[in-house]
Length: 177
Image (cartoon, rainbow, N blue to C red):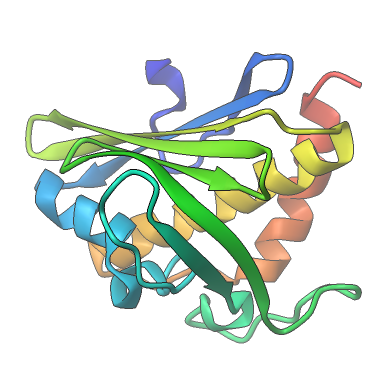
């Protein structure tokens, strides 16, 4: 899957209901791990929420996607300013692997692998319940990871919602119907 490690790469279906997407990020691995696990850093690219690093630990993600951009970003109709999701840690192996529940039935894993001075981040979202959800999630992870790459590199974060809308259309064309 090396071809999907660049920041502009698309996620792929690795199983019928499993999306995998990668990014090659500036290291070291401990810094990228901090962006995955520390609420104040994670809120810059995904969602806030304190997370205890032990299997079974519950936590709440709090999304405010309009705050993820360094330029104004207009959220699409039908999306609230804030979204919350109850979750729990499934597995935690610092600083290499984190797995947690997603919407009660799905799960998401983050795997980190050092590659020279960089870190290969592989995100796998399993058990997506429908094609519509797959398109939303694929566009979401793509934009969130582009935002993470910018945050870790110290560059401007892209306009989140405009990017998400364009990517949802792109994934609709790319993913099997």
